[in-house]
Image (cartoon, rainbow, N blue to C red; front, side):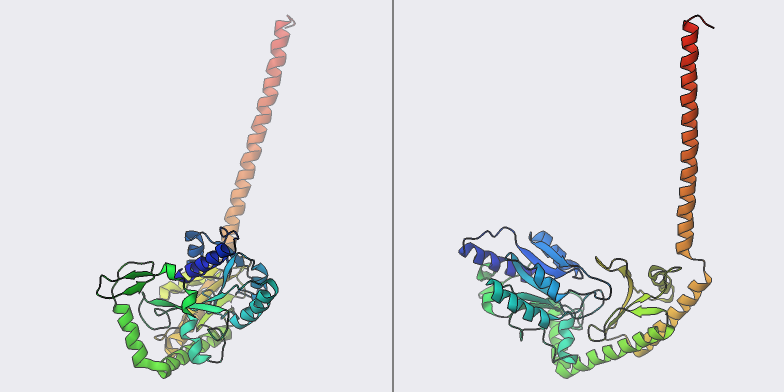
Length: 368
């Protein structure tokens, strides 16, 4: 949110200086973004332009994103580690395409990288990957210490490329604590325990320590992925070169679906979320397991074993999907029968009414 606010204010200042309208800012993202970006757009009145997903491609397409950029775009937000399947978006390609578009149009549309998860992963196991300030259009990066920074919830940062990328007017200076302190936050006073914990982890583990942790997470992710593939029951939706997680869906969900698998795994102590993909891939349902530092190889093997037990149990149970369909069909048949009975009764009433009128007319004419 702070990064987005800085982009909005900088864009507005430039538009004002040029004498152009500055009341309709927009931001371009993929439909796979975390809900915080939707909050930013709604809270700070910025139009959210989302690149829709498609089958087999569950992150923002850089080419489509650049096509959606216009003169009112404050920035393009790329995700280094999608929440849905852990995949890293191609920030390098996005940067190259935006450089060309900026040359053609005379704009200077920048890029923000949401590296909430990937910011603590890519530098240690994919150091050659260009996604950060090595790319000229990347002006700010956010990262969460409470994910792969290995600290409990409550710590994270946004880092700007240069001081000029954060408008000075957004920074407040206070001196009532004994010295000038610049502050740019959305929250109020809070404890410093997360900062201390993060500092401890950084000096305790260092580069080599974090590298070992991330490599171990990746190795355990591969164990889980290979175990699921051996069952022959799942399609793997996640990528190996992203956040160490496994996102997978059933090859055949005509009888039982991913939500049933998730529900039954709770009996074995596992909380494995099941969810549908955003537009235009909402017909795809996915299960996801995130591999953290304390998720060992033994746990990965045990999870595969428990998933196999769940699949076996589901095969012995009647299809909930078909039962639901039968119930709906039965309800439809009941409704149809009730409608037919209602129509028949209405016809009888109409005929009776006509005959009553006919008889009354005959009586009044003295015929009867």
